[in-house]
Image (cartoon, rainbow, N blue to C red):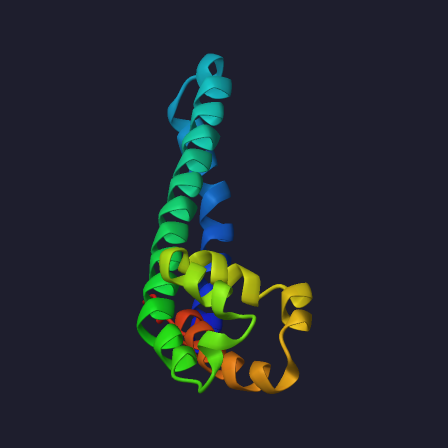
Amino acid sequence: MVIKINIIVLGLGMGLVMPTLTIAVQSVFPPSERGVVTAATQFFRSIGSTLGMTILGVVMNQYSASSLRGNYLPAVQAIPGIQASPLAGMLAKAETDPQGLFNMLLSPDALKSIPQPLQQIMMPPLKKIQKQGSNWNLT
């Protein structure tokens, strides 16, 4: 809940600040240069947003991959008989590509191919990792 409130406050603040900054930049330059200044302001704002989202994506992917390796795979591999099941290939792939396993387990079609009793064992650790990742307090 804390992160939702923080995101709302951040969004409201940015929504109020961005037009004000554009007007402030425009008021500093002569009318003949306002178009260029406004375009440059918007361009650098877009570049900053793109870089910020890219960096955040890398951090989140790294976190989810390390959580899968450290928490999820050991818990699932401890299930009796899992290495002899049809899912053994999927788990072997997860050792080298944990992000692929994460994406596969979030797919509804992939979940349908996993027997229900096995889903009940495999999904709680994954949901725990997702919850930990979404509960980051970014303040």
